[in-house]
Length: 196
Length: 230
Image 1 (tube, rainbow over the protein chains, first blue to last red):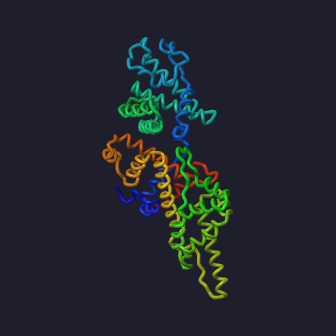
Image 2 (cartoon, rainbow over the protein chains, first blue to last red; image 1 turned 180 degrees about the horizontal axis):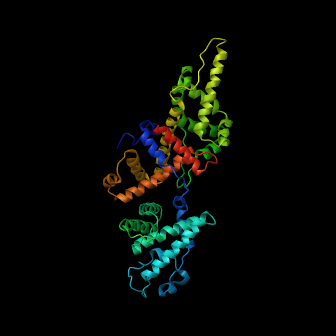
Image 3 (cartoon, one colour; image 1 turned 90 degrees about the horizontal axis):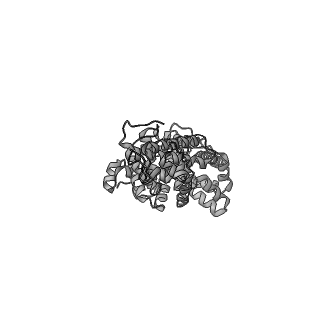
């Protein structure tokens, strides 16, 4: 505890030094111009959980490498199937009747979804589409890191790590667990970046 | 002290200008609430300005600042004109305060019935405007801290706020904080970022004005930072 804690507004002001004040002002830069800031704000809204449920159905699930698993799933493949699923690609050897996609198909699908989401974010028709695209982008990045130990984004690892942790702080389960675990994986992936 | 409302789960908390706009429209009580807020944040900076300016021989700082607020803030048009001005409130207030001081000076001269009174101005070597800006920076940051803390408490984020304060006000590392709170370090950083977002929204909401873009708000924050760094 220091002198500033448990104090009133006026005593906080009296205790603020110039350096401290400048540092706190610096925290205010940036507004919500970054898509991820706007996404976090949307998720923090009172109806954030309901919005998320709807947004997850809007993410373009692009099947890049159709195969047995995807054919079986067909158009019914959900965001949960792709990003969390029943432990996708634990086995990288082959498709199995039990329902796990082979690693190559799953990874190719993640890349395709990420590419589509990037396209959406770069020229969204509206704010809603931009938010959905941003959500899809970070979900693919998280799934790539967690399930394949691959960094699917060209963004700096520190920036990605921070973004995933920020999203983890506002997402409900199981999505927050995905983001948290993926951030942990990213930290252990020096030099394993797969640009895209 | 009048405070801006913080609504639970509010994504875009009420900015100062939208709050003041609503208060001004709602009649005398609303006007008093708006005035109370403006005074709570800007009375000290205006006193600092006065004490560093050539006006300081005119009387007691508290009396003149109180007189300024009583005169200007009792008129709905003063804050309404600020809303229409598309300028930061701190600039609107300091210009208004200077006008008020000149008015008081003229009035005193008339009252002196021909007696010689020394001319005064605000352009002394102590850069009173810079002192004012520095005081505004601290006052606004203090108010943003207060609002963000209240926001965090109302949204069950008291621990997040505690980590924010320990890190950004006390300068403690996340490792130190995490060890004391028995959580892991990344978790501490995430919790601090959550509180930081609340603080950031509060801060930007306090300095923004009607029609201000994100870039303009950034520029206003930069101006306040420069005042503290010079």
